[in-house]
Length: 271
Image (cartoon, rainbow, N blue to C red; front, top):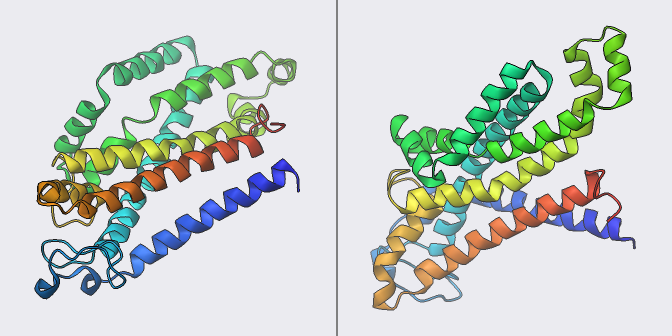
């Protein structure tokens, strides 16, 4: 079996894991995370693999439900952010110089403000909740990818076949559709996947700090924030298992991005 075939198998295995995790989280009803006061603060056992919390709620169900919700927010936010990066990056490279100057100024502005502070401000301005958190993540994670796309498009503009197409009277739209987008699609998809770990970690971070979602919303940041109060009482499992599961998901998304980069990026396809 070649390295490329092994990479494809690993990619499909990770994708299958995420699909199962999302479907599992969606299938958990309110009764699955409902309080059971006769089962409070149980250590991990066969009936409750992650134990139960101070209200008798099953921590495995809460963790999977919270992770699936956080993944859903992260996927939407990172997708919107990647689309913004694609639009701004291509506009900066293809349109007149003054558009490039504005795009570069906007990129420097967003990157110059501390990431978490800007995210919290945007979330507050939009009323917090799911909308505020999703918009905050989407509006703060695009600059790095936009710079990469801009650099790729600027390099492509120097190619002879693009100069010939321009002399033949082809428009920027034609060049973008026929020549530029097919070339930068691998970088775009890889950047989209690699944006997700940042998105889900920042969603968990601002929720953990109390600036994001309401306490009633099932999200991994809220679970971790609530669990911190009970660490000193010896209930280590309330924070350990959700935190470890979050790190596992982030790590697997990071690996997925690198696998896709090796498979489809022309600069890494032979690795």
